[in-house]
Length: 151
Image 1 (cartoon, helix red, strand yellow):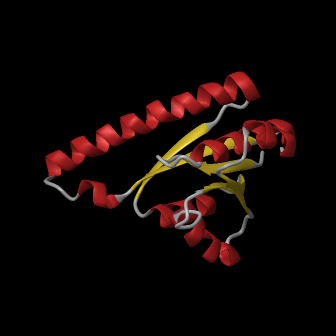
Image 2: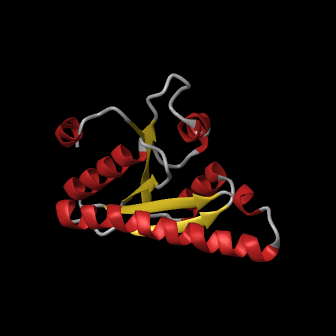
């Protein structure tokens, strides 16, 4: 089964990327794999403190995932998978694409601020020539209705 890989983070544009991935998966018989990356700089503390912070980050990720997963199951009939990795976000996204041969499309949400589409979109579009799958970039300002129309 072809899976849409979407990145779960704290950005506002993440919501539209999640919606797009779930809607496309529902319409094409695919699946959704949600990837959350815990950056290494979050844990440069003493060992015990770093372990506690890592566990708290995983708990937040699982809680955030459950919100999206419930919506995907209830509204789109898609049961997403969660993958949590630790490291540099772009490096871990590329590694996940490489490690899971069922991933067929990487879905990213583009930020709407004047600074640009966001660091993930910027860095991954630079690497897109060496990727083995296409990247779909979902504008952060698309309405739910417009997303439904184009998926």
